[in-house]
Image (cartoon, rainbow, N blue to C red; front, side, top):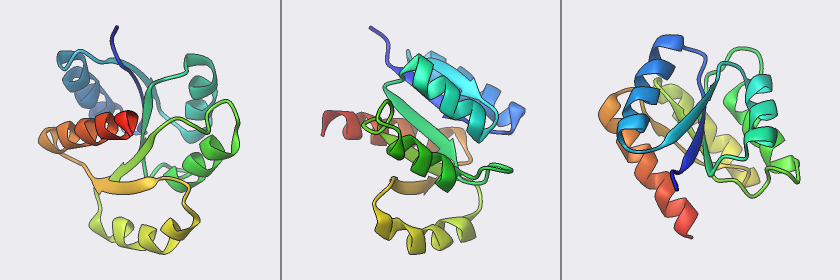
Length: 126
């Protein structure tokens, strides 16, 4: 059985690139281009893990992670936040104390996405 990943990423180009990488890795991927769409898909699709862009417009990645963890239908799903701006990662550390999501990773290259996938695998084994 293939692992099912939900990617919540507003950039169509980045989402397509990440989708291709995950497909080559044998992963089935659903893509949402906004936080609210991601929440709907997470409830219905029931992915094995969720990758969320921290810097989504409107409902940002932190709000998405909080909503996922507050919903009994998605609360147990592993969530990894990612972004392409290091300063956002630093700002996230202030928020981390509420224990809502895993520490975000700085993933904006294909090689780094592979690192996120390994992190998700480790979360699923835990």
